Length: 284
Ligand SMILES: Cc1ncc(C[n+]2csc(CCOP(=O)(O)OP(=O)(O)O)c2C)c(N)n1
Ligand SMILES: [Mg+2]
Image 1: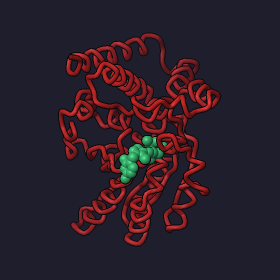
Image 2 (image 1 turned 60 degrees about the vertical axis):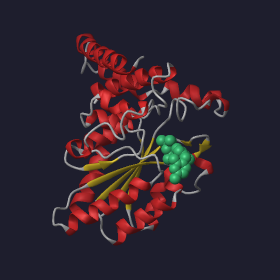
Image 3 (image 1 turned 120 degrees about the vertical axis):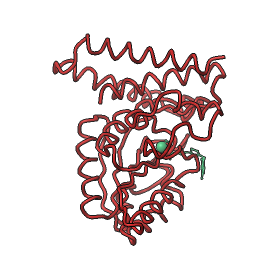
Image 4 (image 1 turned 120 degrees about the horizontal axis):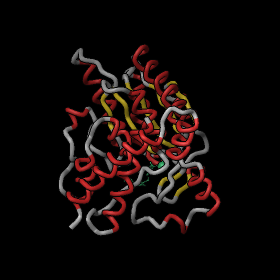
């Protein structure tokens, strides 16, 4: 999991730099959300089909999507960049929560074809304010759709804080639709993995929907063009940086003797090669 988190961080940083140079039109960083994404993606495994939002770069890394394919869409070179069927990872969706209905429809369709499979839908906290999300939760509940909704609550919908978007948590709201839910702080990939595994197993064994709210942190701006320091309190941002899940997990595994300098050095070399590859592919 640390390898995936470090790789996602490296790709994310390089893509941000490429956007600053004008090589990409836009980039949405997943900085701070790597533990939520890698922990959940590892628990989902290779079999379930994923309907992502637009910030799930670390999930894409776990799914084996190469960096150039991941970034190509943001240079306007392709509609998607990867083969959704090969990777079982559908195209990024920028229309908030639309993928929630796509995922539920897909799950119902597969069941009608007697080829039921588990579907995972990623949404952000802001996207849950969309009517599509309520429709998707309700339809999934009444149709017993085998869908796990993974909501990354990173505290923000662009400049709108979560506390101004909803008075109850999305996990509590899911219960109102008859959807079993979990809510957890997702700064640590190990505990995220374990709870997401429980949620996935529930969805599979009950053949009904579930929702897990992963409380996480957006360290950067909403996009590379978002002046987020103009609306964020310096303290909040400083705390987010100090709690960086990638650095915390790296230090934890080093102190436990799970990884050493040699292992970290070889990962650094892999990341440097991928960054070089991105530079060659996109820098003008
Ligand atoms: C239907 C729709 N309405 C509005 C927008 C504009 N918009 C893009 S991202 C965003 C905020 C989304 O926040 P959240 O779901 O929490 O995801 P995050 O960006 O934090 O990952 C908004 C309002 C959109 N893309 N689609
Ligand atoms: Mg958000």
